[in-house]
Image (cartoon, rainbow, N blue to C red; front, side, top):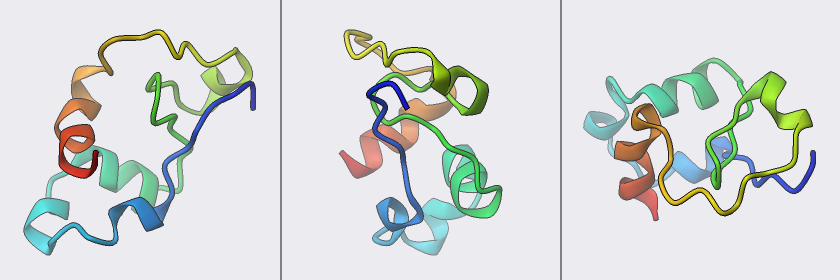
Length: 70
């Protein structure tokens, strides 16, 4: 997967129900089963490209969750 570090449902185990409710990243990874990189934010079809580990900021839709579990 070109160096990507993917979120797994285990990454969300410590989130309360209130944190999970309405959280986009939780929904796509846990409920939707999509692969999303923790480092660069790439998902699914973008995972065949090398991880852009030098990205300083993850996309907006992931930012709130990244701050929650990191």
